[in-house]
Length: 163
Image 1: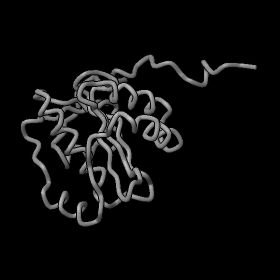
Image 2: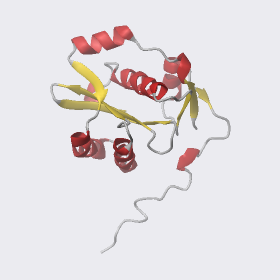
Image 3: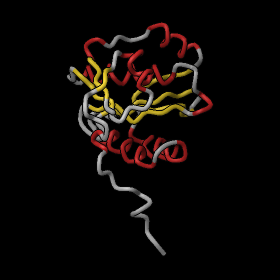
């Protein structure tokens, strides 16, 4: 199911930003030379398709991938305009760093970046934690969007090379 977010209602969470900063966590736009690092980090933790989507986000101008970093270590990422224009995602936080508010901070900062690019609304494609998105940014379900834009996606296992 896809969700819809009114970007004009999204507000920064100043307290969360301050807490993360005090904990040494920085949320920022990824830089071009970090593409391979981000792809390599995503691959073992999340869907292989997310690696491709992150690469597409890196190709946008400006780069449409934000990252969470502490002491030079990648803790999480969030992309937009990857699967389709106006779509938020994919996004993920390292299991060891969950519970610190990084996912929420990445969501908010990414949606605000989308608003700055001129979007009035964002779609969250094939949303996993629907309650989180509803509670955090007022996201609402888009009727009849069960397959999302991902319907008919090629299965990498079916198309893997054989020996």
